[in-house]
Image (cartoon, rainbow, N blue to C red; front, side, top):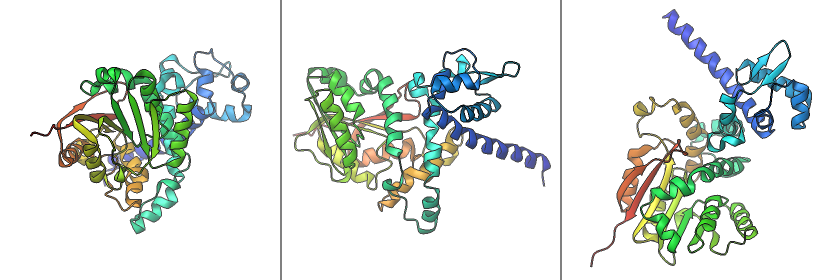
Length: 356
């Protein structure tokens, strides 16, 4: 036995134990607003922070000790005070928007709630349906909302050739798997001459989205409950978008073909999917690969399998995305980046104009 390798592995395992623990504490810090309460403030005692945040001091004190031991906040033993360093602020507070990793760390606690179901799925292969994931829709809405606020109008839509100009004049855009419709609300407000149409299988999400649109008085926006595998268009769309929606589908090939057929000739499709390659060897170079494969096992692959689907998984990767797009009939397929959306690859493709 290589004792040095065993010792190094012991260190790694201790790191995983600490990392998993601190992930949960960071999630609590986000949900309770503790990080936000510390942002830009001078060093504070646990009593001062508890009063500022409106929380119980004993819990705040224990949380601060965890944060200090992980070097997420600075600790002054002489004054028993704690400080959130300016260098850490944007990565753990709501001010960081899509950069807020404390918000992302909520996923660890949420996924842990279905561990028993996933363990059973290892035996049966049946998967775990969406209905088993409590509060996951809230989490995804918060995560995607931060990205849309930061990048939708300035980075994502400009990735589609001619989209900004066409939408300003007047065009039809559909978003499939739109969730609570935050992206479409931003688009409908920005481009009043265009019409926007959201589709999602969740009736709850559609009701929430329509209510939000009505509150803003948006008349160029509609939401329809619809399974993506049964999606059709009464009138062709100029643009169709999907954001992190295809890899979860039970029938991704059918969904992509439906999208292709719902576009007008020359219409464009923006397919946003998790940034990954299609082989383990390539993905092992990515420092976020362990998280990606965990998310896939615990959610993305499992919900697809629960529907009797293909189970593409989170890391189905660039090569397989392009293959699926080509099989669906798309052409002019390109990959684009959005600086404010570092975890995804943006694929743009067109429905080729038919020739007489």
